[in-house]
Image 1 (tube, rainbow, N blue to C red):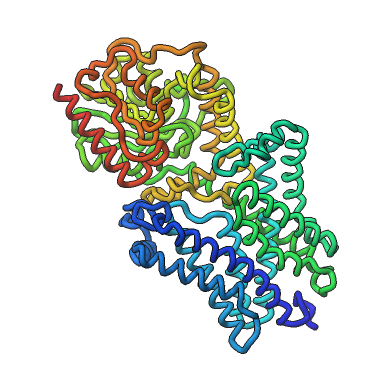
Image 2 (cartoon, rainbow, N blue to C red; image 1 turned 180 degrees about the vertical axis):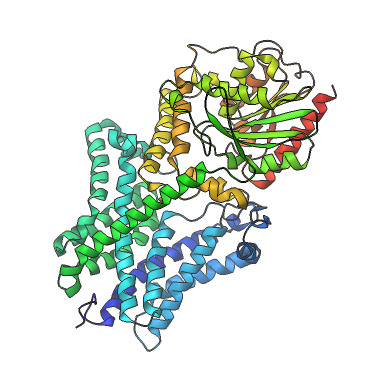
Length: 609
């Protein structure tokens, strides 16, 4: 018996692998069967395919373009998913014995893990939590079986076991940072949604708030305490594994997360193995190893957070920093053109500047106009002066926008302000202050301040948005940003800015600035609905297709166009619809380029009037 082994024989190690493979293989088979059952999702415009230009970005890595080209056929995807169903079935049903069983099972586990990685990279929305958990069981099992030594097997089991414990513990920490979880209302809120709701249980919890609060806090405390499962107490380990199965099967029944039960169950054989006190390694090495592993993970998260912060504070290539009248230092990207217009892009709330790079590049490449984009104070490489932090208001952001327009508009140059989301509200406020600074306003899916005053947003909706910014800020402040998956929008950004865009989403500066601006907006709300524009203000309004499909949001956009006197009203039919959603109309290459072309065409046509 070797002191450093988890089990007395390698056959015992492989029993752990076999148990994990059966459960994870079944989960992977179900995942691919779902894709094959509704094969229309694999069509070119299906949700399991990327955006049309996603794999054609010439700035993507060569290996990524090769992968996209190889997979970007429906028959290839159908074949791949069919093979995954077969591989998962073999792992689930076949016995783990025979001369070649170890090699065959290791190869099948490796195939499922690698194919899952490829599909996650290829799919428009990546992979879900069940597939990620199953991958954490299958990839180490493949290494363990094919590694050729007991040391590799032991390392694989330790990895899976620690990952399993961390998956619960980190989920508990993330929940603890959410205000709804701390208030004890999160479970009830989830059960009320269309996606994960269960009306009967929701009504029961609504009628029994104490039970709802106990269930919510019980979930958080149970997840936070999961490292106790690694104590050398077999009964305690079994209790945690049993409670985890109850948790996952309850979620499967009430929330429809069926595959999660099998996928997360595949992590528990390894947790049980490394916690068993009857094995020589458990009593003496487990506590030190578990603490060391968690310390390394914590240190890695902290180091990555520091590096992200330093990277974001550094100016991107081609940008410069300028101190404006307020004392803030703003990071600016400015293409100085020879045309008659200066186009200033005002970003949305909580949107990194990288989200507008396709749009900015297309404006520059397709015109001779001057084009400027900047990061508001607190975002990215811009700095909010210390004196401005304590008594900050939304008007302070308008001050900076006014400084930009005054500084960069040359004599005889007409200023066109392009505002997305909250950026449109900042432009509206600047026009109210000094209409002479802006010759043409272009609002793109802009915020309408009246939506917060007797509008379609309820008090709960307004509070929930603030809570979401607060949760993201808290998560990133404590260093958990590194665990956040990049949003689909970030994955579509140009390659040379994508890394910085993802870093911005994972950094507390973006969420702190967004929360500060949103609170500033709420503090300045009028008591009743207002006339948005006074006097003659030339403006064009564009809205995302999904915005125009909903009557309440469509009416808000139409109000932006028709409010007050709009000299362009007679020449325009009204709000123009553009493809995409509020968060993708700039970030995907085809949408960003198309929107830029339409904006340039509109600017040129209004200039000829």
